[in-house]
Image (tube, rainbow over all chains, first blue to last red):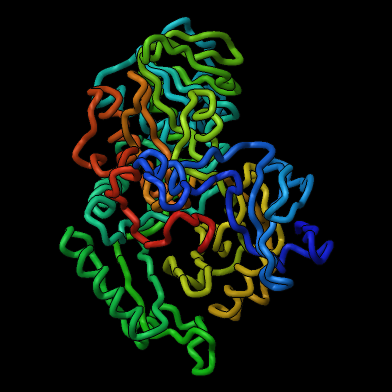
Length: 88
Length: 418
């Protein structure tokens, strides 16, 4: 069981959260020319590192806010949680 | 190589079983190989076997970080099936089915292939229509498919909950009678023994640390047991693909996720088929030892842990109880986890890469075991001929950027959503 510290609600059990994937992926800017390669990078290509991973989570059964977690993908240790607008 | 037979069993029994040959050797790596396969799982071993047998390449090494069969090939729930709708997936897996049917004879090793049939349960009229369509597609590809109504399903699995007030009442199901199970460890040992006998070096406990690439061509690999020169490298490392891809400066349409499975204590035969309860994220079969083998969904976040978490297991077993209430009486024997190379459309990749001499076999999601022989066969072809075979032509790496996805389940790129 992961214990996740929601930046808005504090420590809660994993059961209240939904995963949202790699948070380092940036959507190409809207209303600008987007190359096929950029779109491919955004939609399909993932680094999927073993070790520290920055990812989105959704407190879906709580405050319903999206936020970011820095977590180790081999030990599941959670280092830090941030609001979406915050950087590491 | 010593042939396994009743005669050899009796002969060795008289010698107190002291004279059996080792099934495969434990060689030190040579300085140079014609082909190096990274990953000594089912797919890697099968690839080496078919390279030696079909393409007469003998100077091959398999480099395995752990021990052969210690990864996903020893962690899966042993299901073999070809109940796919898309032509590319159906033909590929039906080719595998044909290799499964003859595998015990071919490898002189009893893989205990048991074509007992698989039933996918349907829980609405709409799902029955979808299954009817899938069954028709399968039959057009020469695969057996039978659409079952509720009463027919009840005859086959009377122990399931057929009461009216359940959340997902059973409307019927789609059955592939020729699908089944096999003993996964035997597949590893059978391929390893045959590959070894044809001169393949199986090098265990050897980690790949890097690649030597000059002018876009592969020249060798660097391992924990020294450098090895080679012109051809096949990557066959499933959940660890992205780790090696990083060393190659490649980013792939793959994420590594965690999947759990479990078995109950052994009981007398009760379930004669593989049954999937998709609406409840649960499937089960009964092993030859009598254990109920059970599995379900991914844990749901990127992970290399090979070790699961309780909430998902609890969810899977809750759904299992909804389908098979008798499971509540059983004790759990073992649970375990494995790491899955989840591709962005749910289908695998067997292809060349932009690096000359580097070949990629990955993206098996949670369905790689059934494809083991076809994966090895087509990957061996691709490595030997430096070209894709008709069977893996659609399992290309560039299908994501070109839009020719094989999104069999239509899940999109959120691979962790079940």
